[in-house]
Length: 288
Image 1 (cartoon, rainbow, N blue to C red):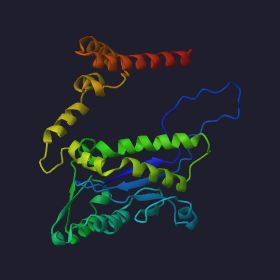
Image 2 (image 1 turned 180 degrees about the vertical axis):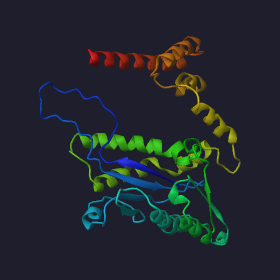
Image 3 (image 1 turned 90 degrees about the horizontal axis):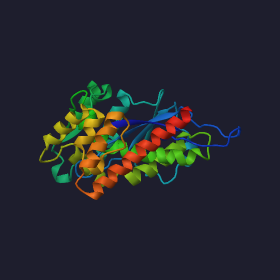
Image 4 (image 1 turned 135 degrees about the horizontal axis):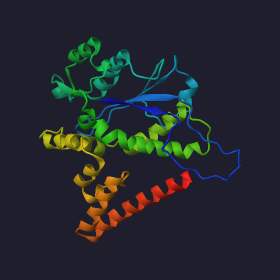
């Protein structure tokens, strides 16, 4: 279980070329509204219904009427700032996690594990008491390594954020801002397309948290996080190496190119090097 935040109108960074002097073209940076989404997945590929939190006091009927194809089991909450809270975390545990992750009838007396980070709302006395009362064993990840071990951070929120920014970039060409209803409709589409049972199972495997744990994956990722960009590129398979952004990383990729064992690897590296050159040239042109 974990939370992630979204700015309603903020998509991916883009360079847009427009005719000089056309005042009708303007940037659309977003209206600064945001939402928090709580997601939870299971090792068997279970994807629990999300909880969407946004700023406000009361729910408006008109908002829900304009939402399209939203599953009935989705939940919505409002807080002053659009963030989660201790009370919302307890409500999520009781109304979503407990309801939608119950073991089968013949195993209803068994305990099951809830993995989460050390956010204050996850360690309040009310939250812990609610866990024990429902045979739920909460386990917090160690501090400062959730980017390595937290399943949703490692494998899920990245693809979701990428798909969401693509949706925002599409609508930003036709709208001045994005409201709460539009956000929910876009997130619903992203949620259905990206957060599949396969991705949920893959997240546990990527994090080494399986029936047969693989701690080497976590240790390797921890070592990778401490290295420079150039060193990270060298540790990755050629097919996964990205466009170098810094000089040393570029030099390292050139050396890898000349030492590549096959044409396929050389072709991949060549494309990344050309991309880096084109990006650098474009930046120089803008500065001139």
